[in-house]
Amino acid sequence: MDVHLIVNGERAHVDVEPRRTLADALREDLGLTGTHLGCEHGVCGACTVLVDGAPARACLMFAVQADGAEVTTVEGLQDGDGALHPLQEAFVAHHGLQCGFCTPGMLMTAAHLLDTHPGADRETIRAEMAGNICRCTGYQGIVDAVEAAGNARDTPA
Amino acid sequence: MKCAPFDYVRPAGVGEVVTTLRQAGGDGKILAGGQSLVPVMAMRMARPSVLVDVNRVPGLSSVETDGDAVRVGALARHALLQAQPDHPLLAEAASWIGHTAIRTRGTTGGSLAHADPSAELPVVAVATGATVSVAGPDGVRELDAAELFTGMMTTSLADDEMITSVRFPRPSRWGFAEFARRHGDFALVTAVVTEFGDELRVTLGGVSAAPMRAHAAEEVLAGGGSARDAARAASEEIEPTADLHGSVPFRRAMAAEMVRRALVRTGVEE
Ligand SMILES: Cc1cc2nc3c(=O)[nH]c(=O)nc-3n(C[C@H](O)[C@H](O)[C@H](O)COP(=O)(O)OP(=O)(O)OC[C@H]3O[C@@H](n4cnc5c(N)ncnc54)[C@H](O)[C@@H]3O)c2cc1C
Ligand code: FES
Ligand code: FES
Image (cartoon, rainbow over all chains, first blue to last red):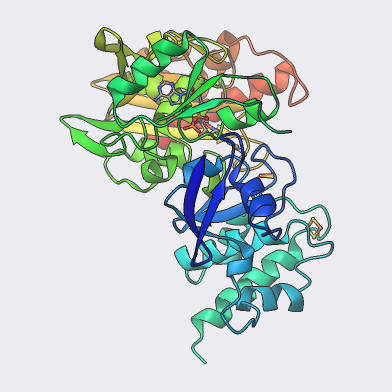
């Protein structure tokens, strides 16, 4: 089936079987391998992307359902000149990743979190990030990174 | 794992949904939020040959006040329930469902039709005496939430029926308490207390195949008993089973504590 969508601000088209998940279409058909697949049943959060601005599990949506939608993946976080997003900088600075497998989902979840909860405290960050599983870091660095990025954003330079 | 192949249909109206399901002859499934169906398909525990995507059926996504109740469209997402101000108990219950990325997609109709014994919305539906509107080949019928849930993940819906909306009456007072290992995990026990007129209802989720009213606890309350006495009665009348998440005594203790908390939150004397 033909699917027309906007991915990271650019028009995209894929021709897929209905059972193709959005995650697989992004990775296999569009070559955007930043979106990772862990569990493929909604639990780990590695595949989290933004669909029309809201976080969604790309493993639980079929690509055909995204026809006409706007999708943002981790590749879309950087701005045009290739500079890292402040959240990505914060993950680097605060040891928010080790192997990096969970990181794309963590970043997309955190990006939405900071947009919807400006000035989020640690407790809110912990609660909101609880749907993303990390097998390496022990989470402290991730919470530190999101908190730091939130603070940096709330303090105008 | 990946899902088995299926035909994909995206009807523009409820009538077409029902016709498509009917033509599929029991081998079709409605796809709403996909937060329960897609995992089950990915694990190949379900292999429908036709998926009927209802996400673009118009007019089913709103939450509206309807007299002393709130009418929720089948496609209203958990995130919308959480954000609406008209039915605070529904908002509280929705906030306990999974995580943000689940709540942006999962729907009210899907949660009721899936009928997971640990899910929050079925408990609220039974606790408030909700009325479920169901479209089928012979038109629309209405049924009590208590008649919808017939057992573990089973409902009285026919293969060619679709929930279109749910009417949740507003209790005058209420209390909600849930125990899960981590916030966002499925509940081990959910207790919902609702007051209608001078009647206090105690409804439990996670302790039986379908949400259940704790009638012994309700009798204690009707007789002027305390929250603690009612909580004890509730823990004695349930018949929980042991699994890797907890033993029978543990589940009874958690049920008692959640009932106590929900009653105290309602304003019942401890
Ligand atoms: C990681 C994770 C955590 C979760 N945690 C929780 C939790 O804590 N509590 C909780 O309650 N749920 C939880 N869920 C499940 C979530 O709430 C689902 O959204 C919900 O159970 C099903 O709704 P859906 O719209 O996604 O339905 P779908 O998955 O699309 O469908 C589920 C079933 O209902 C049928 N169906 C859907 N809509 C209708 C309709 N209108 N009429 C008739 N049949 C219909 C489908 O055919 C299918 O059989 C979780 C899910 C995930 C992935
Ligand atoms: S791969 Fe989608 S949630 Fe794990
Ligand atoms: S950094 Fe390895 S899983 Fe999170």
